[in-house]
Amino acid sequence: MTDSEPAPPSTGPFPVEGTDAGSPVTTSPGLFVCFEGGDGAGKSTQVRLLADALTARGHEVVVTRQPGGTELGARIRDLVLHGDHVAPRAEALLFAADKAHHVDELIRPALRAGRVVVTDRYTDSSIAYQGAGRDLGAGEIRALQHWAVGGLLPDLTIVLDVPASVGRARRGAEHDRLESEADAFHEAVRRGFLALAAQDAGRYLVVDATSPVRDLHEQVLARVDAALAARPAPTRAEAP
Image 1: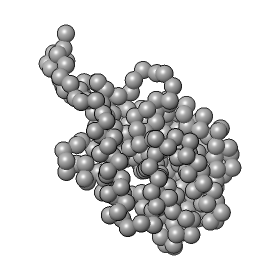
Image 2: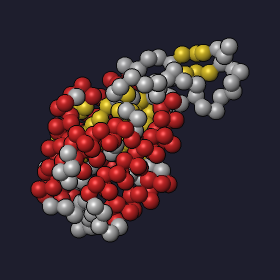
Image 3: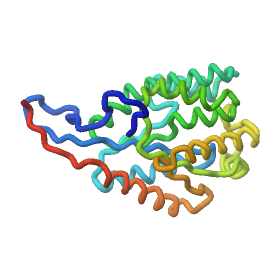
Image 4: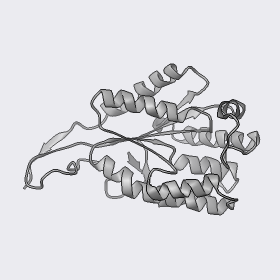
């Protein structure tokens, strides 16, 4: 994963949690992969396919989502997506609180232990949905999200790009508060994701989410394989 400003490293080499302090340990950097995209893009399917493929190859994979990846996050998810009206700025702050807790409680510890973390949504969703969709300003929401997660960015962000009309057709009749927004909102969100990807192309993979599921998976897996191959090799460290 990538911290966008100098800070203590959040990946390896770190001892794998659960080892004895007095014995040799294997250390390895983790890998942080995020799936982004509009509602109905097929993120959950691609998250599952990637996690299954990596697990079959022997990787230790942590699958999570935002909001809702922790007990606190699940409460925030229910409040924001299924509760009564939430003012736009309050919505942005609640999502930021979810991310701050999620990173500290789950994501950083997993990465320090050398695991592959695969998340369904991360900071870009807030920048796209609240910054672009709610028109709160991408720069303001980016700064809020950056602060909330302590600058932690994914090693790879995969954007599943889908037109708003296609996403609506896929979602069916039951919608949460954000899904029920008009197509104009979702097109603004889509443009927000694409703008983020264009600003940092080396860290993003944008795929056409109207393509067949297996074709998408192969594109994603090839890019993740490249990211895994670029990691430093695990090392054996003797305790002093």
